[in-house]
Length: 175
Ligand code: GDP
Ligand code: MG
Image 1 (cartoon, protein in one colour):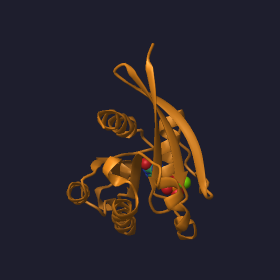
Image 2 (cartoon, rainbow, N blue to C red):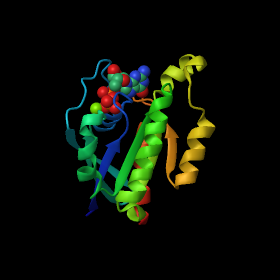
Image 3 (spheres, rainbow, N blue to C red):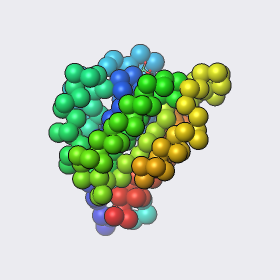
Image 4 (cartoon, helix red, strand yellow):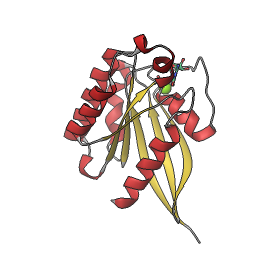
C-alpha cells in the first residue's frame, strides 16, 4: 500500500506570466494559446509519485491582478509550497516576483515552505534571444539570495514543468 501525502501549493505572480498555464500543463498536459484570466482563484489537484509516496498537490492558482492582491494571504498562509512566477520577457514581472518572495518571508510560515521561483515562457526566448529581458543568472541570483529553488520553464512547449512539481514534491517529503 502506498502512502499519500497532501501538499497545499499556491501560485503567485503578475497577471499573464503563465501561472494558470503551468497548472494546466501539470494537471492536464494541455496548453491554451488564449487562456482566459483567472478571477479570484482556482483550485485544482494532481498527484505525483516520488519513490513509494504519492504526493497529492492541492493547488490554489491565484489571479495576478492588483485588485486581487489583498486576497493572496488567504491562500499562502496555509500553503506548504509556493510557486512564484515571472515572464522571462517582462522585466516588471521579475520585480513583482521579488516582492512576492519578500512578502512570503515576512508574512507566511516560510521556514516550512518550499518556495520555487520560475521564469516562464522559455519558448519565446529560445525562438528569439532578443526577447529575453531577465538573464538566467539574474533569476538564479535572486533565488539564491532568497533561499528558494529556481527553474526556467515553458508551459507552452512543456519544458521543465513536471520537473518543477517533482522537485517540490521531493523537497516537501524531506521536511
Ligand atoms: P496567468 O495570468 O499568470 O495565469 O497567465 P495565463 O496562464 O492565463 O497565461 C497568459 C498568456 O500567456 C496566455 O495567452 C497564455 O497562452 C500565454 N502563456 C502562458 N505560458 C506560456 C508559455 O510558456 N509560453 C508562451 N509563449 N505563452 C505562454
Ligand atoms: Mg491565471
